[in-house]
Length: 506
Image 1: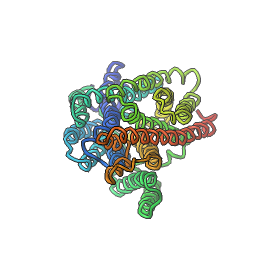
Image 2: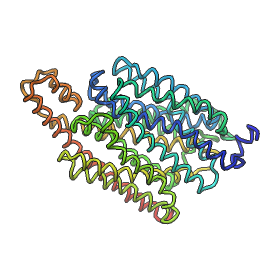
Image 3: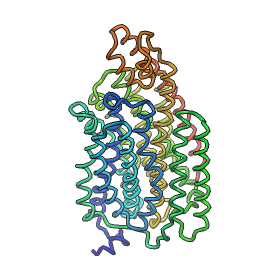
Image 4: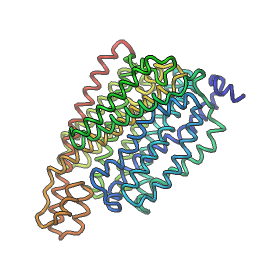
């Protein structure tokens, strides 16, 4: 089989070759999901070593998906033109190199910069994997199964990340979690050229620098504005940035509508199946990432578990995501795509409802039960929504369409920490009561984050330390209750909207 055949006739691949290629494409998926959840568990260790502010903690977590979201459409379009496998390998090399540098960041500022660079190379990885899958698996049933496995790879990585990350954090410094990328990406760089067929759009349009600038400016500015609105409210600067992003977005859409070969066919959004699938994708990841953000901190900083113990307590929920993601395939054959997807989003809402009702008690069991329910919903909703989004476009445009789907995923990840995390931090700051014996600078540190309160308490007399930790824990859990209620209402609304819009269409 020649390279030309591999590029333009994926149906000529044998069944074994298709699944072997999928196995290789799972490596970057595992890497990104391991990196995300392992980093969440490193927040307490980061707080002790780098002393970041509450806003810096959010930036350390958010800057990667923010940059990634801004560049996904661009990288997906470049993959369509220059080859998706080539973009994948370039991203793999860069991601491994920058991960090694991030491991030794000397300050919170440096780590934020390193995470931004990881976002650039991560933007090359994810659209390439799903668009290659879309072109390799031309049979609808095989493709749905492959996408279910692809989504399960995210969940498996999310389950493996806390275990590996927890063990590393228990035995080494926080930077060791970034070194996970190196041994995962080396097999990708060796095996992908041998097992993954190259694919690209056979009739790509010309490179559009203005379009690239507009879509990057739109996504970057709007995601940044959303994050700042959630953190600081509607300041003049934030509204200006939002207006700039909106103007870029409008200009991009108008440019794509008049170009003969646009880098992104914006008419796809007129398809309600495609648009609703993207919204479900975004909200599901919003629910999962937001939950992990506060659950990891509660288990370690309030319940007092080690990183490894906290990770192991979360594994059942993340395993449920894998199981229900794979089970979604036979569920769709039996009940249809829409009921399975809607039930998935409803489970997200119910999981958060459990936390909203019981989270104020500080019960770790209630949080873990809610987490399992949310994970079950994410597994079902993500598998179906990704399949619906990709099946709505022709294979030649898979790169751009998968990039849009990945953009929804990453925007959901940003909002999960930016919105829920910022609301949680706000409620925490308003609810905590610092003993009057604590100095002003230490009191400010304690009010900034739960991790800061734990650090301050370590240097206080027993009575003052106990009072501070009790107040901080109550404020944190009260904030969790509030954010869970908001997330639950949002998930219920999306589930009902999806059912109404797509009834009779799917």
